[in-house]
Length: 514
Ligand code: ADP
Ligand code: ZN
Image (cartoon, rainbow, N blue to C red):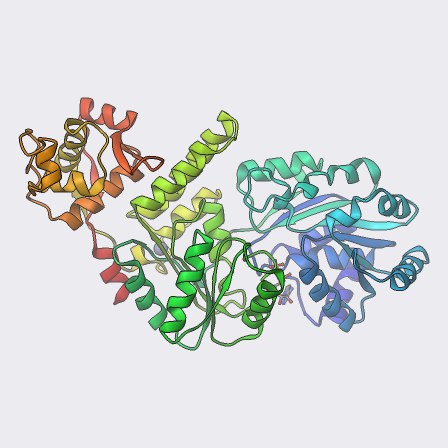
């Protein structure tokens, strides 16, 4: 281990030893190599670039996406005696000139800068004459066009490769699946051999996933276990954020809202209250995320299906940065699946990308519907092997499966016989043989599938249909009225009739409650 680096760890940070892969990474960068660092939230990424930046001759340049995040880091570093500063666009001219003087005179160890500022020609020009110890790009996944944190200016950071070819480059992130990882490496011209990938596991986080049954009641149950604690409730839409926050306040919770449609000032005020509060629930869209540095977030709930496994991992990952036990809950229903599918199909993205998005959604649904350990499925998505964890809902109480072959056949033929245009409720009524005006009007009380599904109740049929949708045997047309139709895999299924195991519905919630 490089002695200078170890010395800084002790004197500046007051830590006795590096943690996990930190030592290897710091050594690697101290020698002037590039590095890609993938470490889960709370893993200690900051030290990996800060220590080499301080120890190596010259100033370390840190690209960071958020001003608030930069301000926090700079303040903490200064407190520890490190000469750090942030270059941002709203610096008054005097302060700006003073800062540039410090930079030119070699009086700074670390300079934080937003990509938009860094990319300005005058800034790049001025930095060209400065001796740089390294360039660290934090939250590097923001350069991935396919990720949900995409920042166009991050995309242009490849300029740095050409502008500072001899300066070691570091890219750091807590989220990057295989394709994103490759995208970052290629874009910043970092070698595969320079990649350090730490395990993804967050053992202190408990995972639970439930089908939506009575979502508000489900959330209420979950929150009962977290009285006096802070957490986040993610919703899909701004409207739902507002409604849910208002509802939670009625329930006596200290709930705040956060979404991109709010005033910047209100948003920031709410973030600040959350950051400092002890028992604050932030109800938010995915706009709330990056840069939350609250160590004691005790729970994260997804009130709607998140966008992908990466999004799920990142959003749940905001819980328990302090390493203490934390709990997550994700709720999902057929509508969520339909809506997410529609987002993909209706986007202007090229076919190849849509294909990938579909696969990502399927992987997430696989996690939701698995009978195995959630953590195993989650980690295997990122390429990590693991044993059943004992700290997720399915480990605590493995779900019961049943042979759903006949049920699936009945549901599919009912969808087929009614013309593949009716929604879930209607199909269930036909399956159960519920005679009503609409069904009579279409003459569906006369067809062969009318009443063939009386062995299950409507709740069970709902769960069966959801699983058929999740398994892609059935498609939901949400652009219309949620009409169900048979997907290609559903036709194959009707033809080949393979055995289909389904989860016994409705039990997960009861299990999670005990
Ligand atoms: P990340 O950016 O990967 O989410 P941070 O760099 O913010 O993580 O580090 C998370 C926490 O762990 C911080 O409180 C940090 O001070 C602490 N930490 C990092 N490295 C060490 C270490 N070697 N020993 C003890 N604590 C550490
Ligand atoms: Zn498990």
